[in-house]
Image (cartoon, rainbow, N blue to C red; front, side, top):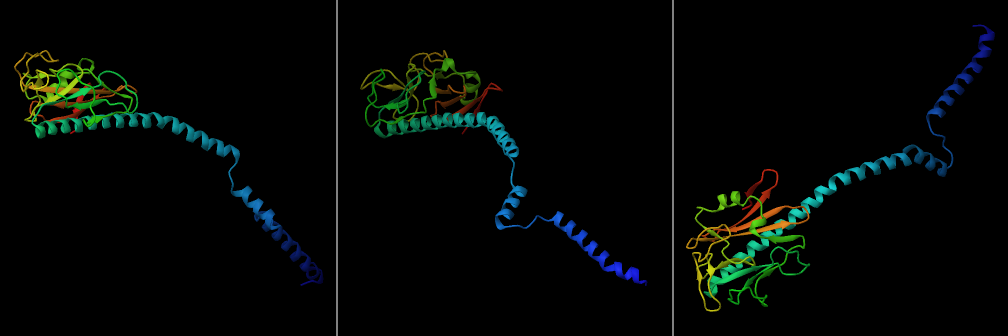
Length: 260
């Protein structure tokens, strides 16, 4: 090995070492003070304002798409709750009629929106043919203000509903006046009151019903509920054997489906 080559060897090693060190320094963050190192890490691993705005925009779009579904679910829940409450009121009134050996009826706040905490329906124990004001101690229920008790004439496709819950078409439906709901006699069966205090409640109709049926037939009742915010319907029915059922109306198929 020549002397010239030997003399240049340490210089070449030093240059190569310097190049490698420069390459390593380019790949790793410069380690300065602790504050500078923390700032450097934040710049490497944080989110930019543009990224945050894009995420917020996507979240707002998803909320706008899902909000109508949430509102509709809440409205359906309120309607279902009204049907459950009315069914319980029917059973309570029926049991009290059997227990007290007298006929009782339910009075409906029909076709109107009521204020919050105002009674929508109650069991009338004053034994009057004409609907009486609510008496303290009578069973009563109050719905969400968006739920309205509607007349049978306003309900959709009642023929489909009646074909499902009535054993025969020879039945008088809702023979009582519009503000009266179901009436029950001491046997616990649907009946039609004919007189004031001390009168009777016949288990066969004395007049025609809302379905146009003649007198002298078994009695059944239909009560319809509508949520005026989304237009959904539900019904509670009582057949001549006093079986209480709840129904939901499907606006797409125009059919009623049982809930119990």
